[in-house]
Structures are given as structure tokens and as C-alpha cells.
Amino acid sequence: MPPEVDKYPLPGFSFRVDFLFSQTNESKYLGPEEAAFMEVSGLKASLDLEEYPEMGFFGQPRSFITGLRFEKLILKRGFTSSSKIAAWFKDCMYNQKTNHISLLVSLIGTGASNKGRPLAVWQFYEAFPVSIEYSGFNAMESGFTIETLEIRYSYFTALEKKKKTAPPPAKKPAPKK
Image (spheres, rainbow, N blue to C red):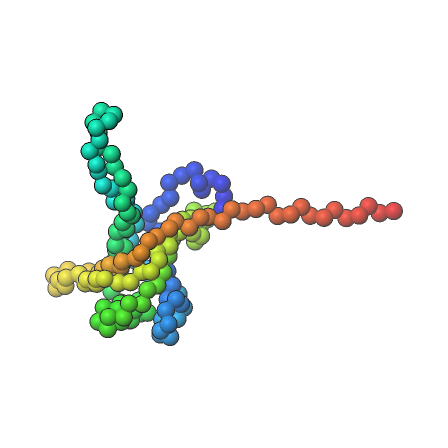
């Protein structure tokens, strides 16, 4: 990746979501599925704190960490009637099969030097659906039906970028005698 990429904020309009279905035992889900979404939100982790009164320095309460909390991942897209994602949701929601998978959310480069390459990637572990919602229908407007998927996960991590290493120096030919 060119060094100048790290100098600027990353654009948030070019991204993709990969569902890693290969972790389930269900043959109908085998293989990853890349899906186009119009919006992704819920990439949030926060500490749970408990405060105790302090009779020390300025009488300020002390905060102690009691846990870590993750928000639900919200994915919005135009509704399509069939996909591996829809089948997974249906199994989890209606058949109450909790098929945990991993998800990848990637910001994709749009510039000439990084077009189509992931610039930042987050992985969500042990994900399963908890809610699905469809937008309302309106005969007076020509719009698309929007599907909103709500996904619970155990935790997420930002994956580190692989550092490019310089190739080994080329071997010099032996001097001629």
C-alpha cells in the first residue's frame, strides 16, 4: 500500500461486507458471500464502568472497569428475494438454529493507487441475526424496499494491515575471469 494512504482519513462510502459461511456445518451455506449494503453501523465498543465514592484527591469518585460491551451491527440494503444471507436469517429466526458465523466489513480504496483494495478491515466473531425489518411500501413513490438486518456478535477486532517488506536484493552475477 502506498505510504501516502496512511496520511489521510479513509472514505466511508466505498465498503463491502463478507459473510464467512464456511464456519457452519450446514452445506447450503458453504463458502463466503459478499453482499452489497447501502449502510453499515454499530461498529462500537464501550467499557462498562462502576463508580465508587472516593474520599481522597478532591473527593472525586473512582471508576473501575467491569466489562466490555459491543453494539449490534446494523446492515441496510435493497431487498432481494433469495441469497445465502436470507436463508441463514430464515434458519436462525424461524427455525431457531443459531448458526454463528464471522463477518468482515472492509473499507475499499477508490484512488488510482489503491482502487478496489481493502484499506481497513474489521472482523466480527460469533455473529447471528436478531432482527430483520423491511421498509414500508408506498404506491405514491417509486423507491426500493429496504431490508434492515440487525446482527449480534461476541466481539470485533480491527485487522492489522500487512506491512510490505522489501524484496530480497537480486544476486549479482559472478565476475567473469
